Image (tube, rainbow, N blue to C red; front, side):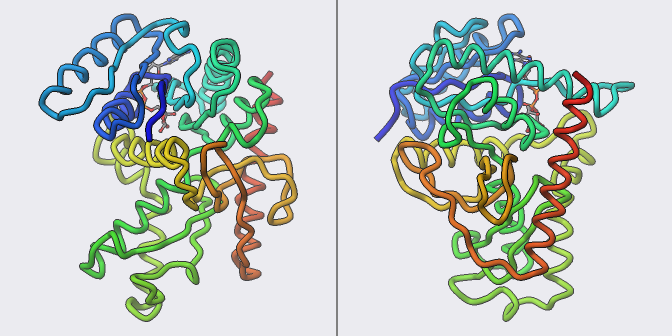
Length: 312
Ligand code: APR
């Protein structure tokens, strides 16, 4: 099963890694890279297509500055935005990226009104809301990528700590992306064995802390730039669940309408992904402490949305 066309908006580090992964997994017959930077999507798209004979995929990859090439795409993975430059405040970045996402959303609505949007640009929970409002799409078709990445980081650290296969590790990380994430300990297991039986609370706390600061740890190494391999892999996993109608349950940022007692904001929750996008939000039981952490996370997202509204 594959899509006819998937478009990746933003041909930077995350976007270009997405397009290569989409092609290598043959998740679409055609992958289109769109970016405002002249020549970049064309050059990267052609370079990736030239890897097709070696890798053995038939997904055509092309690049474009405009959106006509993206017409009728089933899925858009949106990674467009700017990185924070020296002297630029967080608020400036927020405003600039919100403008980028609003304009990208207008184009998506114009060329592919039935598509599903996977938002990757940060601050993710807020940018997903901008896309929801600008496209006018239902919440089923605007989903944010955050939880898959945070969960992948947590699982990768557990695998290192216990020296076991990543394949056997199940985990669920909810809430906002990064600092305010909410790892659900009772839903974390290794081949069904609760994590608490395999690692001390102290070690678990250390892994949670490392996961919370996972993005910063990569920036610390790279200095100029942020993570892209794991973020791209996470977005592509969501696209795969949709394209193949796998009905996977993955933690994604969804527009809440009363779930977990929260409404009118994007927050990471367990989502069932299938051919219609967000098929269902699974309301798992939370401890009082986890519920409180989720509400703190929600407060954080609301504050950023308010900041953005006040900037306009
Ligand atoms: N339309 C299309 N592309 C745009 C636009 C726009 N209006 N504005 C900027 N871009 C492009 C840039 O030209 C650049 O190629 O978005 C790309 C962003 O790429 P990078 O700067 O390499 O950023 P990247 O590391 O890929 O991160 C992108 O994903 O994980 C998040 O926090 C990260 O918000 C960031 C996003």
